[in-house]
Image (cartoon, rainbow, N blue to C red; front, side, top):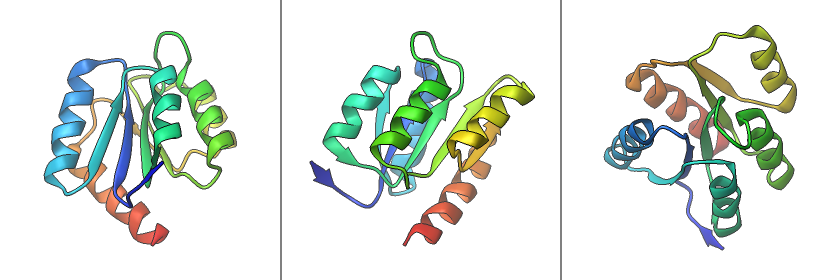
Length: 125
């Protein structure tokens, strides 16, 4: 298992979002690891220790909530930021119950993502 304080897991079925976040996180000095679905995310959790995860709420296959629950089973302390294009209150409440740290509505501001990541990771140090 590779331990590196700045590994950030990015899970989104939209390739454009993965690439945007990957490039942005690299420029910010993080080591992004991208996954297109829940299975890839869980595989990555076996290989790396993550500082934080950015997770899409709606994906084919495993939903974001299912992935969130699985990530929290592996590492209950992992900060998870959910991203959603949908404002469904019930999904957000379920994510809160599962221990989500923060969430963004798509389209999100990349600067807001940066600021929230900095705040979360500063608290984790």
